[in-house]
Image (cartoon, rainbow, N blue to C red; front, side):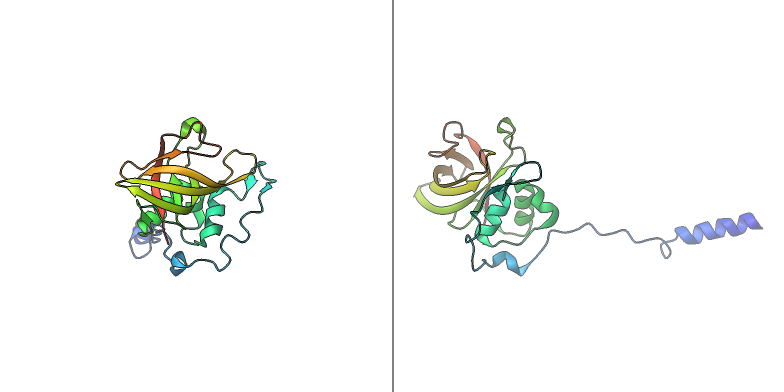
Length: 186
């Protein structure tokens, strides 16, 4: 009799009525703030300091770009890498292959230069040079792991191939064939 009661109890507990509901996978954060710009965007983005944790610069390139744009979308785990942020924004429809001033350029994996999670540039200005060619004026932080900011960097961008070639700045010696994912736009 005890065996029967035990079997019945186990069957009841394993039934859908008693079973715990599986948590739904977390969807990318949707928010109205994604389209808003902070009133003081850029105002406090330049105070770079060596960080205490792991001796890295603060802010890193991703928080710097967020500060410049006021973009508060796709927070949390999506902030662990520029590539993760781009994927979340792409899911929400906030990306474009076409550059625009005030957008964020997300670079893809570049393991040979220790950027396997990508890199972030803030797009200051764009100039269409005809066809797929664009000249971009960019700024970014932590490009040299020495806690510096670099502004007014010129780069050539091919919209069709999504290749970026640095013309000036710290990366101009080696940054000729950098793969971009695209742009996070307002």
